[in-house]
Image 1 (cartoon, rainbow, N blue to C red):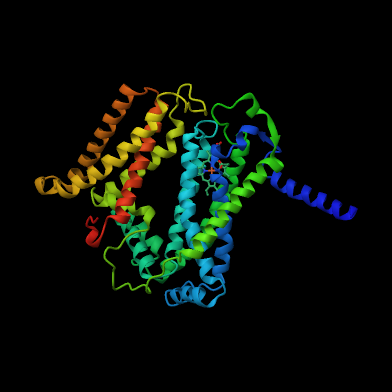
Image 2: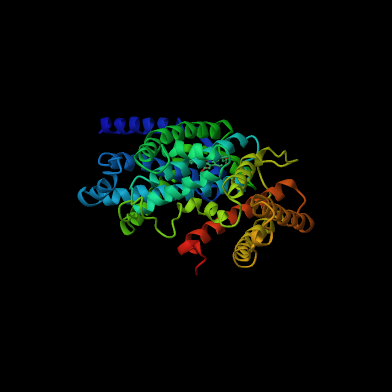
Amino acid sequence: MATSQNYKAQRNTRVRNLLLAIHPGKVPAANLRFTHTFGLGGMALVILLLQVFTGILLRFHYDATPAGAYQSIQFIQNNIVFGQLFRNIHYWSGMFLIVISFLHLLRVFLSGAFLPPRHWNWVIGIVLFLLVVFINFTGYLLPWDQLSYWAVTVSTSMLDYVPLVGQGIKELIRGGAGVGAETLTNFYTFHTAVLPGLITIFLVWHFWKVRKNGGVILPRNTTEEGLKLTDTYPHLVNREMVVALALLAFILVFSLFFDAPLLEKANPAFSPNPAKSPWYFQGIQELLLHFHPVFAVLIIPFLLLAGFTLFPFFNYKNATGKLDFTAATFKPIIVLPVLTGLVVTPVLVLVDEYLLHFQQHTTAIPSWISEGLFSLLFLAGLTWAFVVFIRLKFSKKKIDIVLALFILFTTAYIVLTLIGTFFRGEGMQLIL
Ligand code: HEM
C-alpha cells in the first residue's frame, strides 16, 4: 500500500516537473479565467500535436508520386483500419488549426497583448500563422485529386503577376513550369519535414517569449484578488486538460460524420470550372477579379501583412497592454468597422462587377493605373474618410484608430473569402 502511494507521489512529481518546464510554478489567479484567453493558444498546440500524430500514421502508406498518390489515399481510406477516420482527423484539424490560430491572433490583438513588451512575440506569432497556412497549403496537393491539383495550379499561377521574380519563384515552388511530379516531391518535403521543423523552432521561441514576458497578459480590471498567485499545478493544468479533451472530442465527432473530400484523380488536361484556390486564398482570388493583378496578389496583401506585423511598433502614447474595453468609445470602435466591412465590401464588389467598367472608358491609360493605382487610391480615400469619422465621433487615440482599421480590414478579407467561396460559380461569375 505504502509503495503504491510512494509510486503515485513520484509520478505526480514527475508530471508536475514536466509541466513546470513549460509553465511558471505559480500564475496570477485572474489568468485562470477561461474567457481571458479562451484557451486558444493551447488549442492550437493540441491540434499541432494531433497533426504530427495522424500525419505520421498517414505517411506509412502514402506514396508521393503522381502515379501512386491518389491510389494510396484510396487505399488508406478503404483498406486500413480507421484509415478514413485518421485521414478525416488530419484534414479537418488542419483546417481548424488555421481558424483557431486566427482566433488566437484576434484574442491577442483585442486584449492589447501585441503591445510592448510582447511586440516581438506578436511578430513571431505572425510568422507562425503564415507557416500554419503554408503547411496546410502544401498538404492540400498531396491527395492528387482534381480539387487539390487545380487549387494548387490556380494559387501558384497567381505568382506570375509578381513583377520580375514571380515566374522564377513559381517555377522554384513547382520544380518546373507546370504542376507535376517535382511539385509533389517539393510539397511533400515541405509538408512533412521543412515546415514542421520551422514551426517547432518558432513555437519553442513563442513559448519562451510568453514566459520571458511574465506570462500571459493580465485581463483588464484585474482586482487585488486576481493578482494573488496560485499554483499552476493543478489549477491551470487541470483547466488546460479539460479544454484539450473537449477539443479532441469535438474533432473526433466531427471527423466521424464528415469525410475529407476526395474527387476523381488529377487530370492535368481537364480544368474544372470554376477552378478555385483553397478557401484561405479565396480573398486574394476575389481581389484578382477587381484589381490589376500586381495590386491584387502583391501590393494589397503586402501592405496588409506589413501593417498587421508592424502595428505594435507605432509608438502609442500611454497605451499599456491593458486596453480600456470599458471605455464608452470601445464598443463602437469594434462594432462600427465590423458593420462597415460587412456592408461596404459586398457593395463595392457588386458595383465593380455590374456598374464600373473602368478599363472600357480609359483605354488610353495603362491598366496598372486605371485598375490598380486608381482603385487603390479610391480605397485609401474611403479608409481615410472612415478614420476621419472615427476621430470626429468616437476617439482620437492612435490605438483606437489602429484597432478600428485592423477590425475593418479583417472583416473585409473575411467577406471577400466568403464571396469567393460561396458566391462564385462557372467562369467565376457571381451566383446566389
Ligand atoms: C501555431 C500557432 C500558435 C500557437 C500553438 C500558439 C500558442 C500560444 C500559447 C499557448 C500562448 C499562451 C496562452 C494563450 O494565449 O492562449 C500564446 C500566447 C501568445 N501568442 Fe500565440 N500561438 C500561435 C500563434 C500565434 C499568432 C498567429 C499570434 C499573433 C500574431 C500569436 C501571438 C501571441 C502573443 C502576443 C501571446 C502572448 C499573449 C498574452 O500575453 O496575452 N500567437 N500563444
